[in-house]
Image 1 (spheres, rainbow, N blue to C red):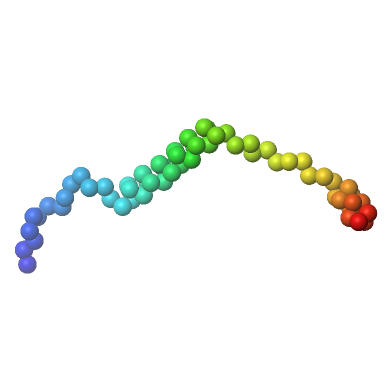
Image 2: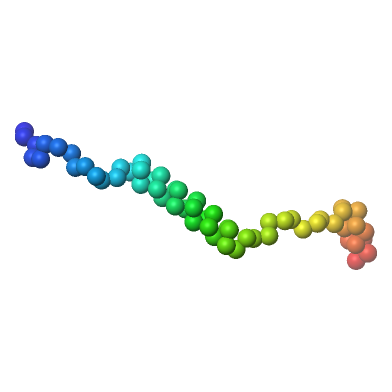
Length: 59
């Protein structure tokens, strides 16, 4: 059997490269949004367990 064309097409991105581009663009987009909105990632103070036991027994 004879193949037509003989050469493989050039200039088409492979699946691996397109996957890399997708991951990089998602990370870059998340970084940009995080820098714009700057969420407050601090955790609130948790009351001690002794104080919680005292309030539960008062009910």
